[in-house]
Length: 199
Ligand code: GRF
Image 1 (cartoon, protein in one colour):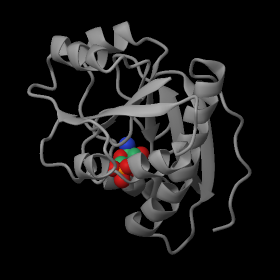
Image 2 (cartoon, protein in one colour; image 1 turned 30 degrees about the horizontal axis):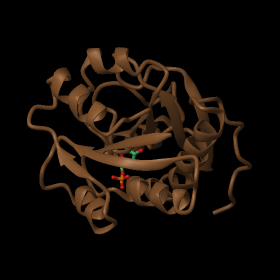
Image 3 (cartoon, rainbow, N blue to C red; image 1 turned 60 degrees about the horizontal axis):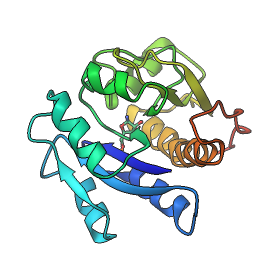
């Protein structure tokens, strides 16, 4: 399975995925794609000899589809990709495009729910747990079928920063687990919830 990972920022989920897939026969990251030419995540890919490209216009579905086809991509993984993917791309890759979100969907998702906004909303709600969700992507933000979730506790003294760090650790385990399961099954499949970690 040839995978494209789409990124907008630092790329820690990308690195976690690359490390998990090292030596894996059934899945390879063939392309890292960004809406920004200067994103650190593209550097992480280039350092490892992986094709790393930036979109000239992230709203242009034809450009997306051309780049994905040029690398023979089977599965698209959004790992910190912050723009809406054009509807023609989600349609062409229906059931083959994943996103990782830093909260327990269906709560705390949708437009504007990214980065620290998510963790601020979780803390403001008084929720006692948060976590990470991997879901299929459709034309709306954070609304596709949920494939896997991992829970972490919310602690009384948490700030958005401390909660984000705990969730990110869970993301780094969850995303590779879902991608490996997809590679073995030949398509994205639901993955049972891992045991909560006591960090
Ligand atoms: C992660 O928290 C992910 O859930 C969200 O954006 C962040 C990306 O972090 N969609 P990184 O670029 O993988 O370090």
